[in-house]
Amino acid sequence: MTAHALPRATLLFLSRRQRLKGAALKLRPLRELARRFVAGETWEDAVDTARALAEQGLRASVDHLNEAVRSEAEAHEEVVEYKRLLRRIDESGVKAHVSLKLTQCGLLLSPALALANAREVVAEATARDSFVRVDMEHAAVTQVTLDIVRALRAESGETHVGAVLQSALRRTEADARALCAEGVRIRLCKGAYLERSDVAFPDKADVDANFVRCMRVLLDSGVRHGIATHDERMIDATRAHAEARGLPKDAFEFQMLLGIRRDLQLALALEGHPVRVYVPYGRAWYPYLMRRLAERPANLRFLWHQLWRG
Image (tube, rainbow, N blue to C red; front, side, top):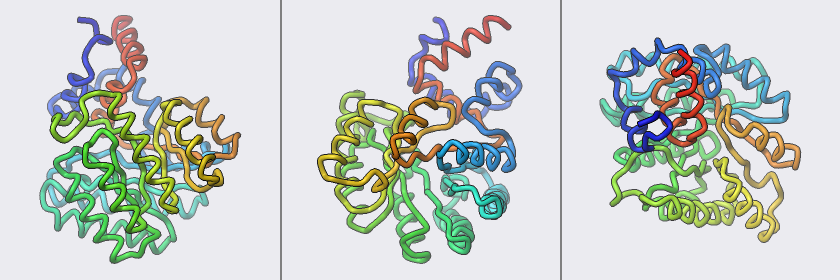
């Protein structure tokens, strides 16, 4: 079986294999491909990338890649990294906020630990009048993630913490309605995790239909949300609904990933739509890259070509 024929499920399975990470980091073709989607390994790389995006009229959401930390000490290191990152973004004057995974904060060790560590990051963001987007991960941690988001918002106020919802999950429309009623700012994406069919839609058409339903809930809420997609059909559906509701272009923002559909990012920005680019950085890029490969067969074909050339 050629690499580009590997099913999406296989790539998502491989993204969770910690044993493969060390070997992957040494493969030059993988490292070269990762540079397309990852700003670099340091916060300096991330801030430089955010600055370059700003010069093109694009905003950024910066994320330090390090999923599922395995000790309290490592979780604390993530807190230190994020506080430093928020400080550097503030000092640079770049239009950027940060995205944070709760597994970075120790969620798999203890929800209380994750809340305490995320609280420190949010406090730093609040002091700098910035914003923390709490990323959504696999379905097993969806509820506890939303519980922690609600706790953080209750402590810090409504303007400094937001959530992410995935249209792949069956529960998401109900979550969207509840969170919108609470005034939570949401990033809506399709989702890039391998889930059971009882909690997620197995068919792409159903994921897309749920995306449109949830997008309409978000745009009708009066809260400023992020519509995260590279799918032009979803973008057209969003613009059509916004126009039908008479919403100004800055009532929401489109969000996309670094290195994917740069042409579309710039075209939307030129039309007057706010566009925010997700800018990941760090050495732990392997799981992130594997999810990007699973999403876009063209990326996998490029990798296979590079491996074949040696």
